[in-house]
Image (cartoon, rainbow, N blue to C red; front, side, top):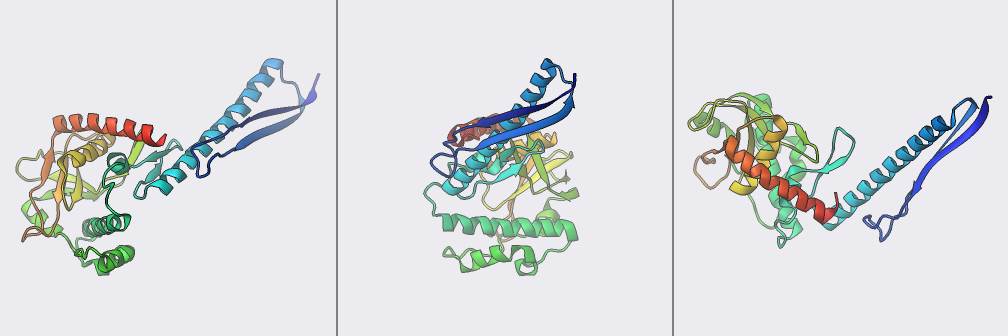
Length: 277
């Protein structure tokens, strides 16, 4: 005998990780089926599916609230939306969440903007084959203002990529893109095949740094290489500390990357313990 049935699946919870002291989200999904001939088992299965969808929405609300809290507590932490739909922290945020604790936010922003200017110049060069002054690139105007007006009086240009390539050629240059691991994500600067001494001539992940840090850079490259399935990462130091405005590349081989990825995994777990995401 066919009949009209109404099914509900819902959940209500209290989240203490949100932007407010307590967040009380509630999700209820209701479904009405007329002329239904479901068995009791089918009704139970469908009701369970409605509940599961409500629970998924609750988890999304929890993640969103957690991200809002983190962004309020500490500037500089970035997030990506994973292809699976979940929100994950960036590779650099995982590595640096407890760094520069005593550096004022406005000074951190000046360093970040100077780095962004250099990264964008490199990206533009790979795309166009021309090295241009920062003021000729519209996308970084805000960063130019921050550096120019900043209290640290940092130089706008801190390196010269074409000179680095003349000394250390790289074939098959391509700009970087977003890469994903199961619980984190990031964007590396560029990739290519190095054609210089001490580096293997294999596809390689490159990242540009003004002031290299062997341990942090190793962990960062290890995550990018793991996501790309590559076994060599190289840091390109571009800075104004030398006459040529670059320094010798820092090469991380497969064995080194394996060790640094273990360290990165510990950082990721510590980030999760600290922020709950």
